[in-house]
Length: 256
Image (tube, rainbow, N blue to C red; front, side, top):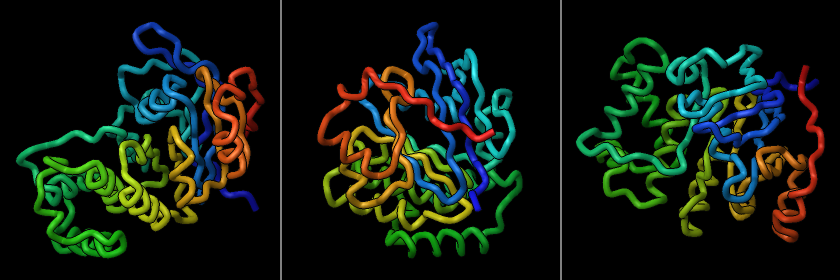
């Protein structure tokens, strides 16, 4: 039995400041699946991630983004988050003076639309800190203030764990990480794989896929998905480079 489709992107065209970036992207992510979206710089990977979350700078000129069957076109980012979509940023912002504990509680309150009792919040946080191997002292630090690249990305994974989205989009979570931090982040992502959750991992390099195995790999080139396939596609890409895919474009099956 096929898992239900969480995300369906149909013939998506997106422009930024009048310039066309995405030129007909088709993509389907089902519950329980991890998809890796790979592509060179400037191919439109981050544009897709911001567009999925509803960033006002990114304009959908045609096509659809369906989440659980609902067209997301009219929904602002906060409503998309409340519906169960999460975006981990490539370059997380520092917020001096705001503790991680206060930040996470405010985020959880925003997603739920109501306050979270202190006892329940502490239980949720403690369980996820233990699962991800993060010390409780982490919670008293200011958000990304003076953090290393690895610490910033671990906080993104902790946010995802606490908010428990159905669809998580991870925009180049492996960017700027050394090998130890990369392993730690990959372990965190693996820990959050679940039958009800879909993950779209956007990456430039194959190296993070040495530590987690995606169900589907897509190659995005020139604003289109040139190829989709299994985990072996990432190895082909590593061996041949992106140039091989620039003149290719296959029709990716899209759920009806």
